[in-house]
Amino acid sequence: MSEMERTLTIVKPDSVRGNVANEVLGFFERAGLRIVALKMVWLSKEQAEGFYVVHKERPFYSSLCEFMSSGPSIVAVLEGDDAIARVRTIMGATNPADALAGTIRRKLASSIQENAVHGSDSPASAEYEIGFFFSKSEIIQTERKQ
Ligand code: CDP
Ligand code: MG
Image (cartoon, rainbow, N blue to C red; front, side, top):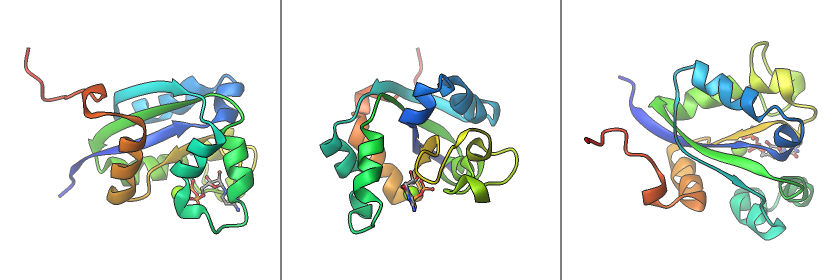
């Protein structure tokens, strides 16, 4: 049984800079995922460090946080059946050289670091990452009645 989930995506600074933010979001919309929260942010280095704290021991942490604070990003909450895993599949592998044809990263990523898009990798990270950017009142309640 599939389950209704919410996940966080980031249209990373390389995509916004390259005017392909609409393409990144289009991949998700065409797959039937619903955008239930959306905003543009320009992360500080400190905010990027907080968002990626799980990677703080990795050799790429500092340059990743530089990149993520190098310009504006678009952050969004996506909702749908199995949204967390489906977003990861639609994104493709971290390294665009390994990403399958038809994925966002295969089409739009330029390197393992500047790889166009982020998606939460588990229910626990989705909860942390959604809460990092959005308060409850900023997320659309799809079951709302008029
Ligand atoms: O984004 P994803 O979950 O696919 O990959 P990750 O292993 O969680 O790494 C987070 C981000 O760090 C990647 O999306 C890349 O932007 C960056 N990274 C990097 O700069 N160099 C690496 N060798 C691996 C990841
Ligand atoms: Mg990850």
